[in-house]
Image 1 (cartoon, helix red, strand yellow):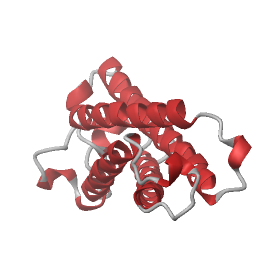
Image 2 (spheres, rainbow, N blue to C red):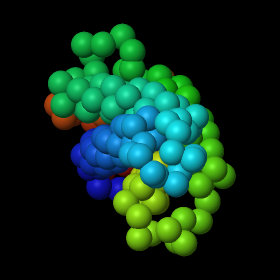
Image 3 (cartoon, one colour):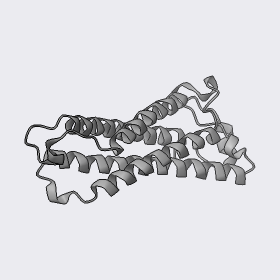
Image 4 (tube, rainbow, N blue to C red):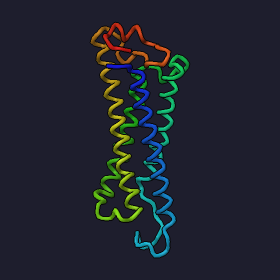
Amino acid sequence: MGNLGWIRAGIYGALLAFSFVLLALSCARINYTLHLPRGDPLNGGRDFYDPVIPELIFTTLVTLGWSCLMLFVFFSGAGRLRFPRLYGDELIGLVILWFFWIGGAGAASSIWGDLSFCQQFQACQILSALEAFAWFGWLTLTGIITLSTVVVLRSRNHGGKGLAEPLPTLNGAGEERKENMGVEA
């Protein structure tokens, strides 16, 4: 299964990058819609904002914080914090984030849908990228949830602690547990 801690750190790094890009795209979109140039045909030239954009900004900010926290747990050791130290703690946070992301990505897709007809305009290109990164973030979260769930289930099947298993860290916390489960640390 490879080095589980490093795999998780890489996935969290990807989630951090996707969240940052989506935050930047969301900020660009809200700036554009709140400062429409004169004569812009969008919304009759009147300033507005897409209701999904503040939700995406909130989601990305929370996800940036969560990803940084989880990378801190991996690189500095989970023993310093009371939460999140265990897979159960992580799964609680991930499921909450997963609902934020599915809500944002789904709302963005339902509002804007297929934007292939207007790709000659920068505003449409930003919306297309925004939709794509919203789904990339959701897909990455789904991958982390799946990986953590597999580890928890393997732990329970091999006499481990299940949701009470400690998260992997750079200094090797939980190594003996993984060796007993047949998982390469």
